[in-house]
Length: 134
Figure 1 (cartoon, rainbow, N blue to C red):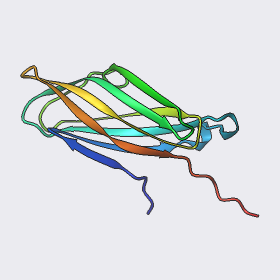
Figure 2 (figure 1 turned 30 degrees about the vertical axis):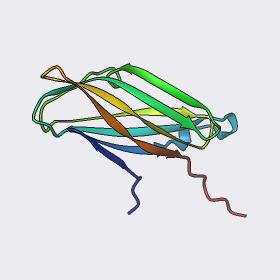
Figure 3 (figure 1 turned 45 degrees about the vertical axis):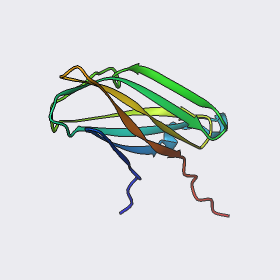
Figure 4 (figure 1 turned 60 degrees about the vertical axis):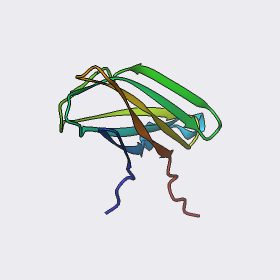
């Protein structure tokens, strides 16, 4: 059985797992449009309640373009995670080339009012070209 690669990082009290996937049916290589979905799992392994307040994504394209995305929460939410809770979501990114990568930081606010930055692992975005019969 083939599975998509996953990327994992634990920072302080947060575990983050990301699984990227190329979406060929939504991509248009001739127009330099490569669409990638990514599935994120965030797990609170601490003994305190944490709220995801913001995110900062760095998106790199193999043609040399770089983008930064900063905002509140994730996909319109600022989830609160009690000890042992998991939050999962999916989103997408569009590149102009078939390869690139993403990485970033989630900022959490603890119930003790401390701020915690959790590193989002760098993950590759790679479009797989279909086999061509000659």
